[in-house]
Image (cartoon, rainbow, N blue to C red):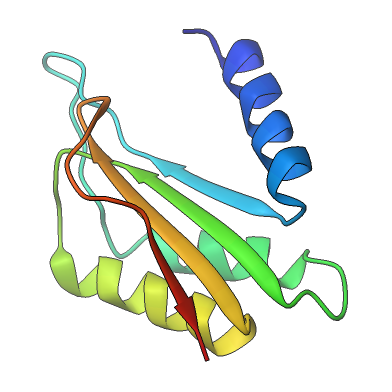
Length: 105
């Protein structure tokens, strides 16, 4: 699926759930794979700072075959600091391995 088609789907998810969606996708292409890494944290902070003031609910979609688990923990912790209610969904190789989880603080 191309980038434009994915962006359209992401916008539909945001509209349906009535909350912002942050998406973190790593590559799983042969000889060009990538995992969750520490360089994503500053990028995520930039995205969180772009959210409208007063954002209380937020969705996070991670599509990755792996990486540094402490970075994934840091990402979710940052989101939980900034949103009263968040929904995190992880997916591996375009197959859902874990059910969606919602957290309310």
